[in-house]
Image 1 (cartoon, rainbow, N blue to C red):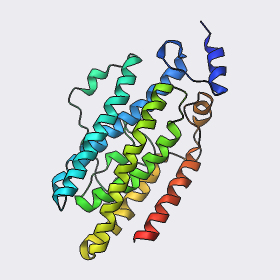
Image 2: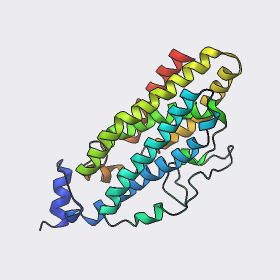
Image 3: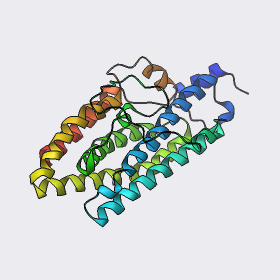
Image 4: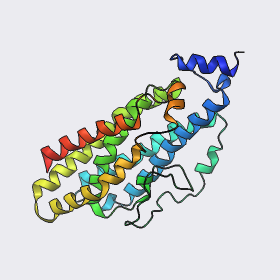
Length: 250
């Protein structure tokens, strides 16, 4: 049985783990934190978006919104099963938890994680109507793609495989959001005005999902093979994607 020091050195050199048995305690803690953040964000995101399904302007759009909610719950369940293999009490996720709870819209939570669950702060803010939900879906869709692209290279192979499989589905969610924004903008009038207002509101909150430009924990996560790109690099990639979309659409 290799000791923790040799396993950490193995991970720092690009090694992979495939089961919880030999995972060092610090590795376990960081991996569980990472998975909990993803699961809680998917559950909270699905809960918020579910409330907007019947606000969709047509049946096809309501069907698309329903599919997004279903698939986000499926993604949460898939990663939750991996957490269970590490001994997490996953039954607590089956109990009633206020995933749809939101703060006041004017609050600014910044990048400091809130208590209660591990969702990204952007999922603490409320949605206001269909246009708002579609715009938020585009902004966080691109953020999710960028985050998952990095996480799909995780040193924990079962999680890397899960994120690799989830990634194309999240890409499709983003495409559906983009199609919705394009339709609203083309329709003009109040719909377009609401889209512009929603971009102004959600963009800084979505940007905060990347954390601070310099993270004191990034060095450790990179050594463990759980992260590869810095917060700043991920944020810059996201900014570029959003600027391109806005320039082409608005």
